[in-house]
Length: 399
Figure (cartoon, rainbow, N blue to C red):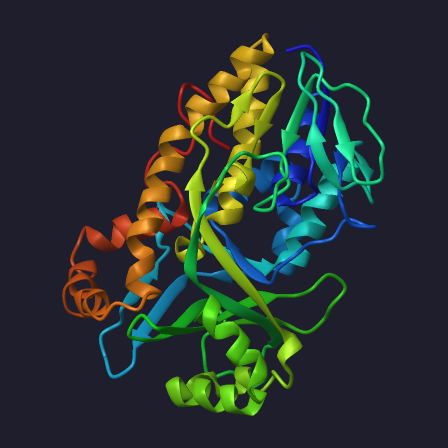
């Protein structure tokens, strides 16, 4: 396809990855961000092998790996149960070992932002998008009253709060509070493992090693604690020591990590929703990432889905000479993979975050034992890695 003039709303992971990929293909790319200087929002996350492949393709993997921590195992136990409830080893495919790359969002942002700048992407801060025009050439309008020049293609990568997306997702009752603390010198938990503890499905506490912050020298830990929207206000109003005592009672091994929290504002709340746009494309406009589909983070696929969206869109523009055909190809290539992972997320989430008494019992006494029987471990590994089925279809090359 001939070089396009592309405007991207949102300097998140998906928007910056797409910008880097498109600029590498010769397109003229401008990214608009609402903040005074582009910056990440959030705490720790895991980039799965499919997401790592996209980072490699856009020239961001080396920086990400320098900052991140390799995770080879996900292990979770319910209180009072010796058998693990979650037990996923990444293993290998065709003799090649695989792992998750756990890192702080700031480190991932740093890697993708550098990759975009290196290939000439223009970044305009303090430009909060409020609307996009109709017509063959799209224009973006901003809260400061400015209107962009016309674009051949506008990409909505502005996340779950997108003002451009028509998606109306269903709010999920549970979310989490997230904090970042130093990895203890005498850490009782493995530095290559996502570790979790559950109390039925009402409560979950997790510890994730996330490597280094940009410019940092001390390894970090992401600590999370699940709660409902209604419980957040009560948690904020209660003494922090009361919560720390509760967390330590639920999981004594988490004490060295919990002790790193001394005040409420070290923990950031995050709540989730579920839903997908039936059609994320329109003439001259496409929605990617959370602007197009949202789910619980239970499968750890959010950032990976945004990275795959970015890669698929960039490759669709390479494969087709007509913009409308390219957008249709992009939608077709991602539809099945997104649908399956959305469905799996909807199925798994209540097993770990819900008020149900039946579902955690089913999880503990039936699903957990079955998960230990081959080929279940292999299937679970492929599910977590993001390639249980091809992430791109319709002939587009996987990253």
